Length: 114
Image (cartoon, rainbow, N blue to C red; front, side, top):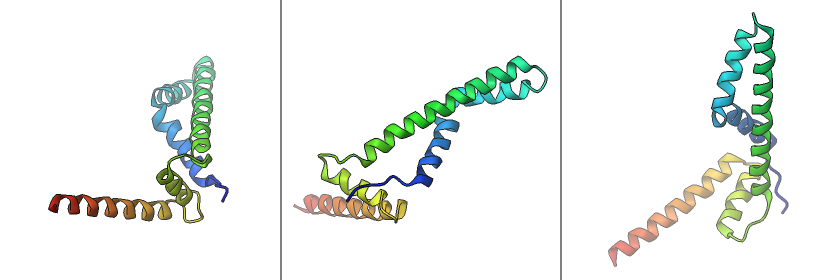
């Protein structure tokens, strides 16, 4: 099965990268754009910083997307990414993750009894 990264999730993560991952670019860019209402050079600098922030956010998310859709040697990672890239998306991913947590905690409990 060929994996297809969910488009909505891609753009959601680009937005979160834009606001939080590159926080030190987005905040000065926004502040300079506000100051740019009165000083045009600040507006252009602020827009350039925000454009750089957006470009870096998209590049970062493209790298993550490529890693998610490329098959791995790790079968557990493949199972999680198959669930994430399925039509169920995060819900299917959460179910697989819950099953893994339950099975590992049950195995630890059995080891503790022995």
